[in-house]
Image 1: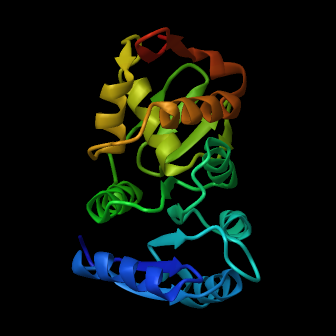
Image 2 (image 1 turned 180 degrees about the vertical axis):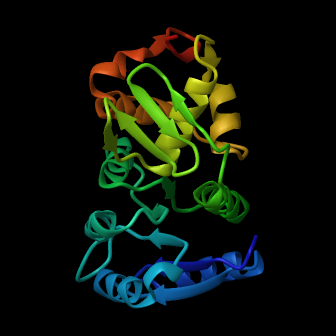
Length: 225
């Protein structure tokens, strides 16, 4: 990995050290916060130099949900929720708050670093220098923005990547496995609910064009031509 700066917020010192060791071995600089308030203070103080934020949920003063929500009000920095909360409803809450990844403890260090690396790579990639018009939906692959009928809509990095992949392959039925391999860009060990959750959120954000994201029962999804 390049020399990225990553903010890790967790009230357990042992967990912070563990994550710091993993990311440090991958070539990253890590700063630590022991609670939500400190995380916000460090993020504000460091300005634009932070490339990724890793948040635990159950922290004192401000929990991870609150920090994630506050960060999303001021920044598009990539956010990974790293938490012991493993229920599907917790994962959905994380995505609703604006998180880009949701990883449950205990976790594989290699998978964690791979997800962080993929997220950082996507957040800094330039892409092709043109806009893609998908019938009311315009994707700017340089600015990484999406407009629906001329109005910009906020998408997380994963939502953006998923939409772009489906649009670039419009009319084709794509299996969940193919989507995971192409969009998530790592060996994924979870289940298909991650894709389903992102599709549901995308449909809502695309408003009148949400039904262009079609479910192909028993296979996966496709973007209508």
